[in-house]
Amino acid sequence: MTRALRLLFVLLTLSSVASAAVTVTDDTGAQLVLPAPAKRIVSLSPGATEMLFAAGAGDKVIATVEYADEPPAAKRIPRVGDVAAIDIERLVALHPDVAIIWSSGGNAAQIEKLSRLGLPLYRHQIPTLSDLPDSLRRLGVLAATSATAERNARDLERRLAHLKEEYTPDNRRRPSVLLQVWNRPIYTVGGTQLMSDALRICGTQNVFGDLKEPGPAVDIEAIIARDPDIIVAAAPSGEGVGWLADWKRFPALRAVKSGHLISFEDDAFSRLGPSVLTATEALCKVLASAR
Image (cartoon, rainbow, N blue to C red; front, top):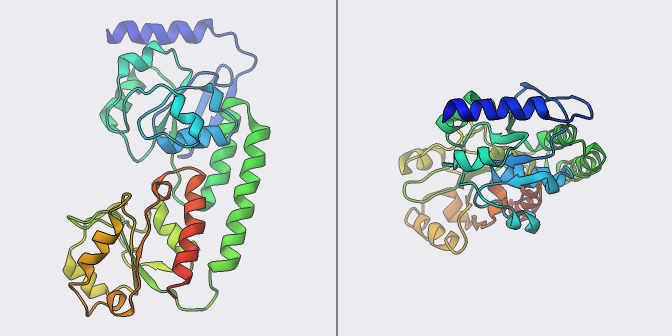
């Protein structure tokens, strides 16, 4: 089966009627060459799907994964699994020109299998909010939709500049924030995660920003030792209040004493797409009221 699938991709490549070859560098710096701009794209992460729509290539996305629900039009796209597990045979049968994968997530073994089959892979990764505009431009090159991608990239740059001007201090002390993304056990984000950069843009600092892991588990003792000024429960819908109630068992914590316990239930905050900037704008307003 593997040999047959590999042959299929070779034949598809040879039979492509190309207007012109396209060369694009993905978000990790790897160069990808296609015989023509991508017209049949499989997106294997919700953030990448949102980015493709913003780049003007939404109508070229022939399949995606669960939870790819932004923009609303993405809900109508067929699913081939989720970030953790995809149906490879179904994906291959769609004859995609390229698959967009989440560079630091997803199922590594399945991604490697797709690579062995000869399917062109474009790696999507957004480490900081400032990386969003250029990532959008690259997708515009991939799909030959650069005019739309450029327009929306400039809009993101404008909004990001406004956020920095309004909330990022020059010399003022930055309050420390525990960003709680799960409750039992307690998970937070390390300094290399996009949400940590959002805290910085909002004029605060991640109390665990020195950790390299994107999503480390932390214990109560470590949190007490670092004593954050603010605790933000970035929780699923309806869970934030309960998470914050647990912290009241530790009245000596600075965030508890000051009442700076914030429930922030916005799924977009963890998505690697333009809506994360909208979520950051909302978070900045909430954090500003706690400073």
